[in-house]
Image (cartoon, rainbow, N blue to C red; front, side, top):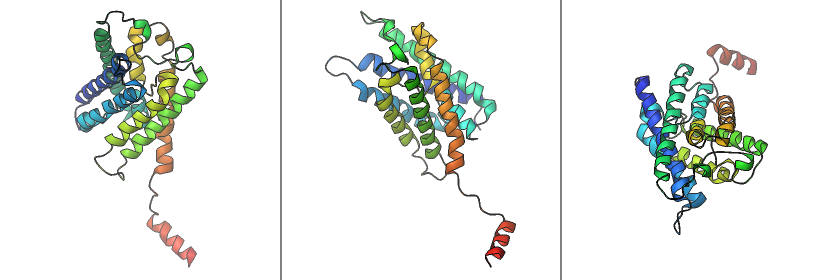
Length: 248
């Protein structure tokens, strides 16, 4: 077992990459004249950050990069709750660092305005598509639930080994394709916290939703997956013998 401090450092680096790469694609490249990557490119960028980090640090920390993922794995009894605080703190630090570097680079362009949001998540007037609080909450819960179901299934010992980063990265891409117009898509409290720290104001005021909803969706998945997808337990010897006698 790798030391907890080293695993936490890996989580911080990985979350830094997720926020800098994902949010950076939205802030720096999405609307770049003539060659902007748009919604599809931003969605793919978020998926690629997780895919690359899963291969890079998955063998070190498990590559959670997300307090909601850590909470879901705890609920599924795949991760010890005693180590959850270290992981969550590291993820938040990494997210803030990633957003900070993005802010430093983006502010070097004439006309940059932090009021643009730095890819912050929001609802109501701050939802890209103007979606209500209720719509945004439902979306974040469902998207995070499905993301955790993908993670739990892809990392199940019965699944093909060594391929988990691919469906996880593609799953994150897919939910971004659907969810960016709704909330800018979070499913990750650390990803939401990073930009909000620098934007302040409305981004901080609305941040509660992007902690509560993703963690709720992840925890529901953490309980649901073992309940509905676990292997059937073999009958004890005594039970099998009694069943056989009953059938006879």
